Amino acid sequence: MIKAFSCHFNRRLSLGLAVTLVSGFLLASGQEEAPAQIDLTNFPGQIVEKVVVPIPAEIFAVLDKLGEPNWGSGIALPSGDVAANDRSLLALTFGGLVAEGFIAVQAKDADKIQKIGREVLTLSNALGLTVAVRPHSLSIIEAAGDKDWSRVRDELDSTQQTVRETMEKLRDEELSNLVSLGGWLRGTNVVTIFISDSFSEDKAELLNQPGLIVHFREVLEMMEGPSGKTPAMRAISVGLARLESIIGSAEIISEEDVRQLRDITRSMLEEFYYEKNESAAGEAVN
Amino acid sequence: MTRYFKKITRRLTALLLVLFLAGGGIVYAFVNEAISMAFEAATPYVEQGFEVREDTWSGEVEPGKPLLVRHQLFRGNEYWFWAGTSWPGATVKVDIFDSEGQSVKLEGFVKPPPKKDAEFSEGSYAGVRTLPGKTATYFVRVIVEYDHEAAAKDPKLQGFNPAVDGVGEFTGTVDWGLAYGYR
Image (cartoon, rainbow over all chains, first blue to last red; front, side):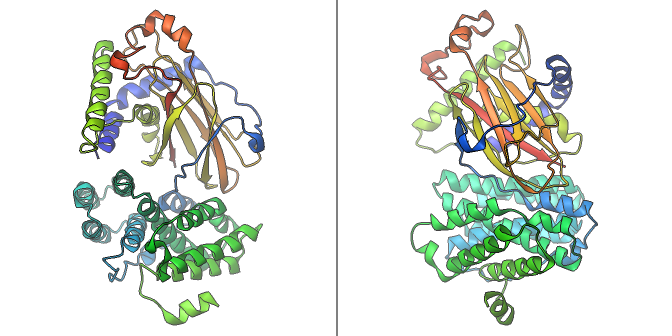
């Protein structure tokens, strides 16, 4: 929290100075030429292992440019019966709820954002992270009341980041990664719904994210202890494999592919976020 | 911020880090200065509508050894990546390539370490902008250059290298941080 505050403080404090200085450096130092090509197969350095998962708002920004979807119709709050004793499912749900907040920001629905802000706090309580999350939750509610959508987006990102950093400090990297997975899954699901409703190849290309799917599969494979072997986690793992088989093999993601991706992500979300729809889940599995 | 004040701030940060380590993790006081530098580089672009992500990459690296960061980009968005190092006398560079290793840099900048009596910061930062041609994984290359022997003789850097009590002393690596924003 202190780190995040310091960064924010630095960013605001240095705004005026930096504008002037960067402009000056752009002029003074010129642009150094980058090599036209590098050999990625024989890279003479260090590959950074950390994966930064894009927030849903990054994809939503492109979807908006390709034709504004009815974002309000995409908001679907979780059913609320998460197993409170299963921290893995709580972490996934937390990520999903933050993604829900990003959808509500696109819809400019202040009431829903405020509700999500309160839900975020409730969920953080179940995760034992109330102290870290409360300031963010309050900021989300306040910014939504002010209809300051950019600030809401920043706060949602900060909330997720604070939760992940707090988990990592507690040496709970598995949970931290599950927060990202939950957010990615909910974001991907709503994107597939909108693309299915109004298909174009340009929109479908947004789903070309095989590297992230591989990352999440590795996250689940590396989970230790019983929480990684529950039926829910196994189902999510199978779902990721199915997503990978579609995205990894398709040169162009077709309308039928998008429909499958939508149904698979929905069935995965039903493991922790939504109530199970037995008929739809059956269709997705078969 | 004066040069003197910066020096005090740097020592204070180091002191807080030591207290944190000694306290067994009770207080999380470490401020990632390389990331702060990257965020400083990003600040003007926020005014241009870029959303700067909170999640970042950072660490320590041997000077001159390139780092490669993989990241998913979406066609239709515009991206800036900003790299920073807080190490006095070090310079950071950042470039971006597609999955074939082809440069996709549209523009960039490098802020070298400050000249004598500079009042802003002792670190360095750099940026690179791209408009991805397709939605895919891209590769961001970060290189931090630092010549320890030259820096030790540089009068501009006296008082920074080496730091007191072994804290911040050059041990073969320098810090780096990478942030990004989109619009």
